[in-house]
Amino acid sequence: MPRRNLIVGLDVGTTKTAIVIGELYRESQVHILGLGTAESRGLNKGQVVDIGLTSQAIDQAAFRGERAAGVKFDRVCVGIAGGHLHSQSHAATLRLRPNEVSIAPHHIDRVIQTTANVALPPDREIVAVIPKTFSVDDMRGVANPRGLAGRKLGVETHVVSGMINAMDNLEASLKAARVGIELSILQPLASAQAALTAEQRRDGVVLVDIGGGTTDVAVFMDDNCWNISVLAVGGNQVTADISRGLRLPMSVAEDLKLRHGRVDDAAREDDSLIDVPGFDRGAPIAVRRSDLSMVIEARMAEILEQVRQAIRASGYFDLLPAGVVLTGGGSQLQGLVQLAGRVLELPVTLGRPPALWGLDEEVRQPEFCTGIGLIMAGLEARAGTGWLAPNPTGPQAVFNGVQDWFRGLFAPKPGWETDS
Image 1 (cartoon, rainbow, N blue to C red):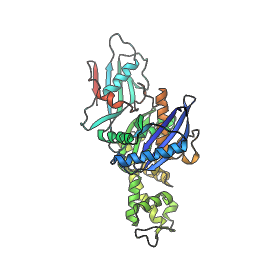
Image 2: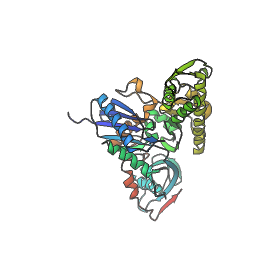
Image 3: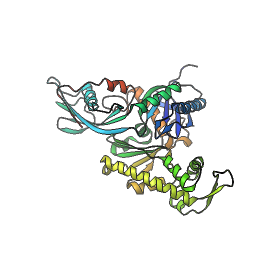
Image 4: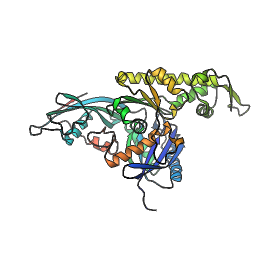
């Protein structure tokens, strides 16, 4: 069979590993060929804790995806996630030489790189440097300074660092599954690629990706990511609460959450019963729907309050006309959009992947935003265009080769000023 122009997204989550396989056509479009999922059992809060189990999940999801697509692949665009990610803002300024009168691409690239020259503990390294805004001389709020006349170029960036061992363990899991890495990118950015419109990213919006072990909170303004927070809470805490509160096995609690979980007003007043298996394999246990709703709503309200605090801490709470977009497997509880609106005090909508050729309506769900977004980001990276393209005026979020790039980062030279 002739080699096809495939592009593959791999979302390694705490509870689910998903593979999305696409094929490029017309140079800038993608045809979704197939999707495969597997239960994740080797991760905790987004980090690999068992390479063998993680590689098995990747291999199983890949096998199912290849069977559905009718093709084989050997490289993926993978998401970087987990509670080990930390972020902070940095700024730098570059004064042009006397014979330079306008801003060139290499000026932009260098001033961005300089903001990454920050002291980190030996167990951490930078995984992304995302420009938020530029300035040229006294002119601020510049989106793209290329070609502008000026003597001084400034930038404010969002610098994200991660644990070296967490990323090495993910890479080892992929290697054990015999899968190579084409591109790595922060998962919130990949999810945003699929779930947010350009207008939302430009005007001001928060992406809240509720996974099994973590919840990502990413603020977007002026078509760039301005802040990322990773909260060590997610859908697994809801399952654990159901298990403890209603005295059920974890597997039964998870199934009950997925099949009957609701946090709407009607559920709180529903006294009908659901028969579920208990621990002793004897007579089924009757669970009242209102009790189930009460347990789920209490934990989800707590998670959403942490999200609210993260948005407040970013400093952009009052600058978000597009409100909040929910994605991830934990976002699909009936009534969650309304609950989130009350807790967050912002407009809330549910994010879904775009209608791509080959993407069936039943899988256009929030839980697949990351996998679809990874394909879309990989497509733009190959073309060198678009929002996530690795160019001096883009967000510089593409992770491919970033470790070697930052390890060889030069020290600031005369004429450079760095602030934090």
